[in-house]
Length: 203
Ligand code: ATP
Ligand code: MG
Image 1 (cartoon, protein in one colour):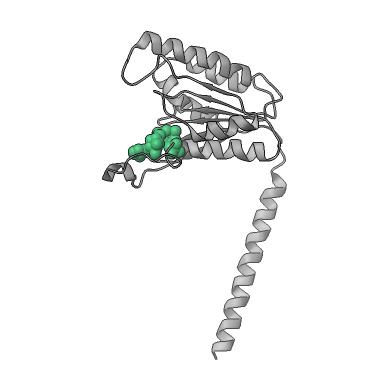
Image 2 (cartoon, protein in one colour; image 1 turned 120 degrees about the vertical axis):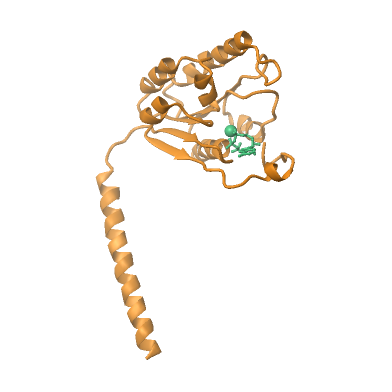
């Protein structure tokens, strides 16, 4: 009796998997467009920048070329930078003149625009396969960098180049322009229970 039940279950499972395989095969076959992908990774949970850097690492792992622009606040160290620069990944980092301490709109805007002018060169370089614009969303939200400029630069990038923008509260138009959008949801974060940011894990 049990044997019969098991056989039935096995058969049902096999049929389900077969149907699933057919559906997946069909979708794989119908995806025929070859182009670089524009991805936005947003939301309040942890994992946006690490995900972006994961793609950069993946790209480098195939001996392809990646470049990173970081629109970060303060003087945070970045473990990924320590590693990836050794593998020839160029970084431009907005550091000086932009910290949470100064709150100076003029110097913040200047720093943002300087970094953006270098990031734009990445977006014009067809030899670069993946461009990570880490924490760019805030620059648009604070109107340090004009949204239209960002959208224009991304729309006019080399055809096979992929771009990733990370940061909370991505502008609606960035989300509309993107091919892939992921929202990282905060369920809980160690910081909320008083755990200090940890080198090699948080930064
Ligand atoms: P990560 O760099 O770890 O992928 P992230 O890019 O998703 O994080 P950011 O908003 O850029 O998140 O924040 C960077 C730093 O803040 C990281 O050290 C991260 O651990 C921490 N952080 C991220 N999400 C939260 C949260 N919900 N509460 C508190 N701290 C957070
Ligand atoms: Mg981040």
